[in-house]
Length: 255
Image (cartoon, rainbow, N blue to C red; front, side, top):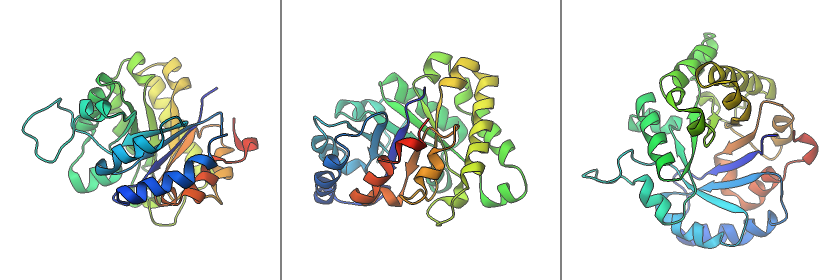
């Protein structure tokens, strides 16, 4: 039984006051929720406010990125050790926007993942194909390549501490959503590739999240799929009531 992870990525939204106000509404709405892990990843400057706001709750806080070095002359960057020291528990790695706009590669995804694990953070590693790659029938090849070039190098023990988020780039912030069947097919490919590189035990235990225009009205359909172990939500995670509805998806949809 894989415990679902319901994660929110706020990207570059909300200030400190808005962060605190969000949790005043959100935390009570999920206080009785069980059988799933709840993670929210605000911008760096709001991490402390978020961590303070969720004390004594079941909600955990993650960062949206990190640098692979422990310290050094890297202006504007933040290390895994810095994040861990303030109480962050999770971190997103290799999101498509990081790859597209800031030069993240499969190699830096691996280096960031190793740095996160060393600092005790739980990485959510993102993979996914572009629209032209899907339309040309290369989704499986792209996913296999991204995995082989990055986290496939992890040991089984290291792999047991990460999650992977499948985010078809064409569905992020576009209103387009992969059908539950399309998402499940991609997740199955990811699990098969992990089995090839890391082993069947790691593959069976791996939690694979879906991300891409997830909303309250499609969450139940997504979570009925055996291969979907949670979601990584963008825009819909900014609304405390809407995100609580996603987190509290119908238990009949779970595995």
